[in-house]
Image 1 (tube, helix red, strand yellow):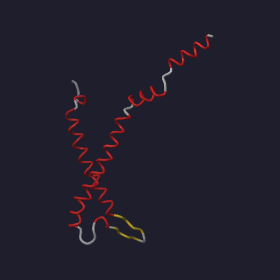
Image 2 (cartoon, rainbow, N blue to C red):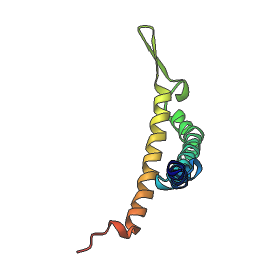
Image 3 (cartoon, rainbow, N blue to C red):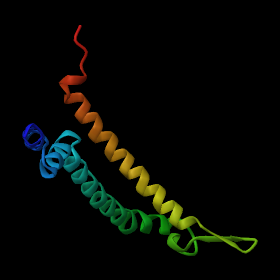
Image 4 (cartoon, rainbow, N blue to C red):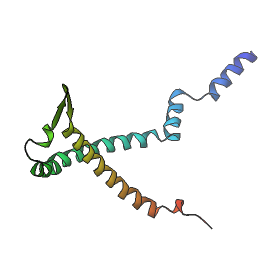
Length: 117
């Protein structure tokens, strides 16, 4: 009889899977991270479009001959896609600049980072 009472008390004390899952999501901010990943991916798509639609045509005006997207060097039978690297570099630089500006604005307004003396 005592064992049955102990088992029922243990069942009442153990949280259910759903409760544990919700607690996990809240504790580790998983939902916020998921939103951040989604926003980051859509931002990357936007920046890729800006690079391919605005910056690449300007570079094509400067670079003589073939378009920058098709800029490939062949050495010893190996092809090096320099155009793809230039586009990725431009995308990286734009994202880096935007993140720098956003983080600087956030840090400037963040009262938690100010030291209390």
